Image 1 (cartoon, rainbow, N blue to C red):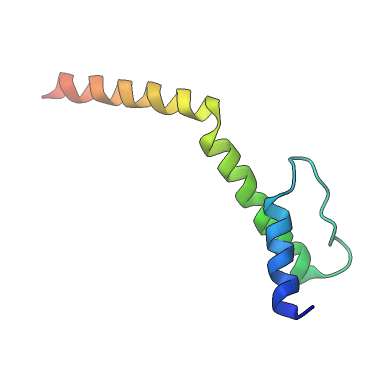
Image 2: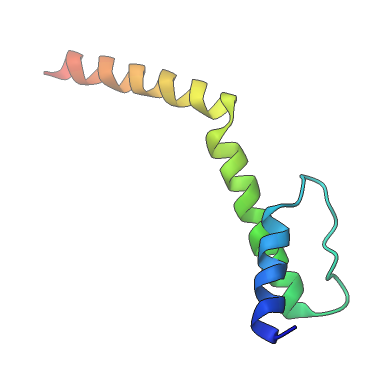
Length: 73
């Protein structure tokens, strides 16, 4: 496996991990561990941004901002 493929796989496997999974590259390779963590953080960000709690929050905020804009005009 080439270095590029190895790096890509580490990033990809981090994005497919489940919350709470341990970094399989910890203690082996700093570069691979950081790439895995980057993928993991991306996965968490996507889950938070697309989850039901965030959708509820955004709807409430849009309603509040819409009401505030109507009262100032």
